[in-house]
Amino acid sequence: MIRETHEAHGVKFYLERTPALIQDRQVQLDDGTIVDCDLVVIGIGVRPNTALAEKAGVATDNGVLVNEFLETNMPGIFAAGDIASWPDPRAGRIRVEHWVVAERQGQTAARNILGARERFTVPPFFWSNHFDVGIRYVGHGSGDDRATVSGDLKAKDASVIFRAGDKLTAVASIGRDLENLKAEVALERGEEFRVS
Image 1 (cartoon, rainbow, N blue to C red):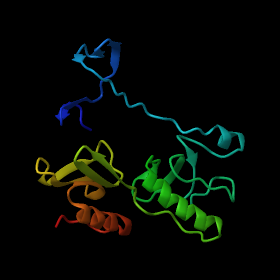
Image 2: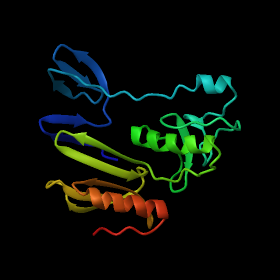
Image 3: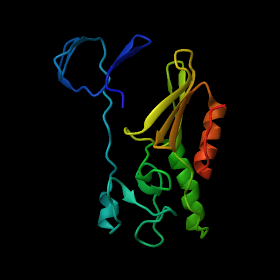
Image 4: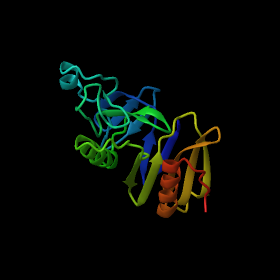
């Protein structure tokens, strides 16, 4: 996990810091740092609203618990998307908040509602654009994973490969979309992934 200050495109990120005081054109962080500013943007996490599921007797824990078919503990009741906590075959039980995951799970859940009994085994895949940098990410790494950089991050042509021991857990890439898609296939099939 990145624990330091980073600056890109005139935007400075103070990671793992909390605002202690916000005043006119100034923010004081929990470590005493004073930041002069014209605009403050604060990213606040969300909690899945599981109240309805709990009232219905559906099992929850950091979301609605589903099995590999995206079915809850109540036969015939399925959950998909941001609220679904599912057993990923590579990472264990996870919940991912991204529309690509929700779309893919929704498709699988719909087929299973119709009787397909199809396991959801697709590795999480999502992307994000930050100014002129498009980041592609596939898999589900943790803060304990070993990260190896292939390529040149400053040139925006690189992949970061995450591994737990010898096991591939995730790949983040900039400017290497094809390589990221190959990593997705390798993760899905449980095959080794080598950077081209």
